[in-house]
Length: 42
Length: 229
View 1 (cartoon, each protein chain N blue to C red):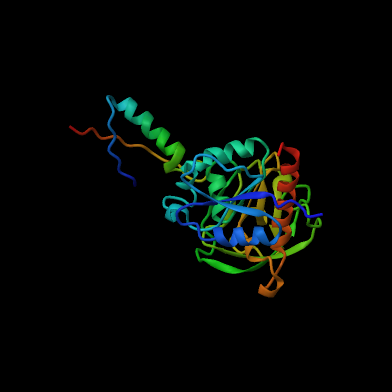
View 2 (view 1 turned 30 degrees about the vertical axis):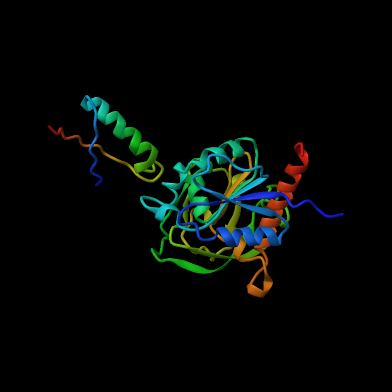
C-alpha cells in the first residue's frame, strides 16, 4: 500500500491525479493493477 | 585507410555500474565512447546510444521505473524516433521497457535468486544493427548477472521482434518464450539481459559479446557517414 497526501480542490481531481500517477509510475499496468481509496483530510 | 571511430554515448545514471565496462568494450571494438550524465538534457553528437547495466536510482519501485524520468531520456527517445540505434543492457533493458521504447517488462527471476553465470544464446535475427555480425542460429556465450531478468512480453509480441533467445534448457530466469533480447518494431532499439560488454575478450571467457557491440559500432559508423560532418 502506498499512502499519499494529495492537494486537490475536489475528490474527483484528487482521483484523476492519482490515476495518472498510477498509470505513469506507481504501477506497471502490464503486470500490476491498482485500486485507489480516498480519505478526506481537514 | 583508418576506419572512422564513431561516437557512441554511454549513459551514466546514479547507480549505473557497467558504464565504464561498456565504454571500454565499445572502445575495444572501434568506437569513441562518450559518457553522458543522466541530468543532461541533450546528447552530444553521437551515432549510437548505450544504456548500461547497474541499479539506476537504486532500482526503487521497479527496475528502471525512476530512471525513465531522467532528463536525458527525452533526448534518447528523440534519437530513437530518428532511427538512431539504441542498445539497453540489463538495467538499460529494464529502463527502455519502463520508458515505453521497448514492449514488455522485466520481473524478478522465477527462482527469486540473483543469477550470475555464462549462458548460451541463440541468434534469432541478423538483420538488426545489433546482430548483423552474427550468423542466424549461431550460439553466443555471454554472461548474465541479474535478479530481475524474467521477461514478460505483451501478448501480441511478434516472433520477429525476438533477436536472441536462451538456448533450449538454458533459460536462467524464467523469461517467457526463452527471450533474452528483443528489438522494437522498427528494429533500431534493442534490449537484452546478458552483458555483451563482459564478453569481448576470449581470455576472460568469451569474445562473443564483441559481435553484438561491433555490429552496433558498424551501424553507428554507417550513420556517421550518412550525415554531414
